[in-house]
Image (cartoon, rainbow, N blue to C red; front, side, top):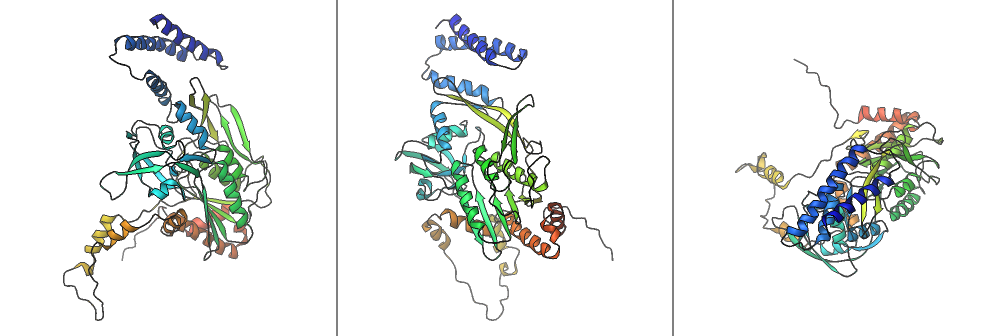
Length: 493
């Protein structure tokens, strides 16, 4: 192809793009693109003429287009045919993959893909992958520079085919290889427990898919068959999914016709309105405490913000006979309030482009700021192995040489590598058992239980707390102190 033909083609593309625009011309954009398309055409011709060997021009073009889109914002990108096909399969609820829940907030420069959880009875759980394992290599290719969509597409494939990965695991010095056979993965996106001792229901939601709506509706219907003190809705580590699923889940809590979210374009013009279309099934008399953290993103933030705002009361919205009592507990959410539209283009590819921002029912946006909880409880992690070792051998009377033992104190037999042997023989626990163990040590979850119990006791003394969210919040903040600055005056003797 001659230099003139390449430049003409680039100019034609430029004119086509500007002709389709309904908005006024952005002269600066047009001028810059026109100028650089000529340069781009020259470089293509030069590479074709001078480069020693161009093995894969298609791959080079895909990366060139992707490079342009990824510089616009962190969420825009170009999807090659395989990645685009994988994206279409993602929201179907059943696909051929390895069965993991990933951290969808990672950036292409990150050298690993964090596994948030493994799906029960899926290929990864059977192979021995664990939550918080970090995938660093897929089929011999490192993840640095690879988008999350590309990495996900590589993990998916035809049924009964093999994918080779390497992971980093805490306390393991070397990468661990795994060969996993892809299979049908039916996502379980929700998990529920009934806390009998506290008369509280717990419901966790990991992502928003078409299956998630059915699962959470089924679990909520079970919980409404009896009276209980409150509901804990866990949206931590939920990076979003289908907006329509979030709207449908909101409809289980708020009246039909309630506004959930709107979108506004770059001219701040409203482009879409999403409202509930079903009647709620939850008992509005009971308080709902929503757990959030910095991995609560996108649709999960919309659901949390929407429910809280309807609980506080909004103008021009369907009246609720008895208002919801919704409180957010944990840490500030991720702050992804942008809308990506996937537009099919030539060569079976698609462009994922940020087109607008989400706005919550009160008109505010979560973009870049997230949602602050009513009760901030920062996550406390388990004591690191080094600190446990230090506390065992230092800072205790029993660590001193020849310390005095009271009469009758039994001597402890020396243990030799028993823990290591036990760990090596351990089989991976299923999702429910892992969740039970983790929740028992989860200070944010335990804090939500305490808040529900405190509110229940407060309502018995003051019935107004059951109908007024503002009063209930003030009451709880007065007696529940966590991550709050305390004013302490010194008293001198």
